[in-house]
Length: 143
Image (cartoon, rainbow, N blue to C red; front, side, top):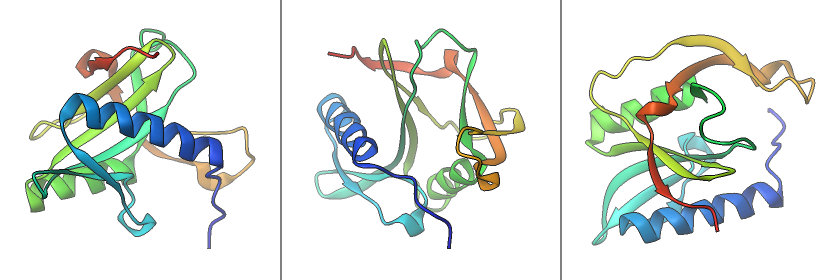
């Protein structure tokens, strides 16, 4: 079994992002089990309507032309969209704001090998999808 790198800081960051999404989108978010691969499922009026992956990046929104997401997480989100008719949302907290991308039918982006190299874990290097930041919308500012 693979080691988990999730820390209390990561969980606190997720909670902060979760609160921003709930306030801006009128959804109640619930943390999903690790077996689902994505962070949250969103509910409106008691009905599941979205799956959401969240990340925190330590740079400004405009620093890079794309933001990466694991291809496995991308595929899982697309599957939820196609099979369950849920929205698939990728939300990122950058240093200068919270931004989100919502999957649109048949979106296709570049796939490359990427990931983290700072932990010396060869499983951190994997196929990743490059989502153009221009496809992201601003959710709100960082307080």
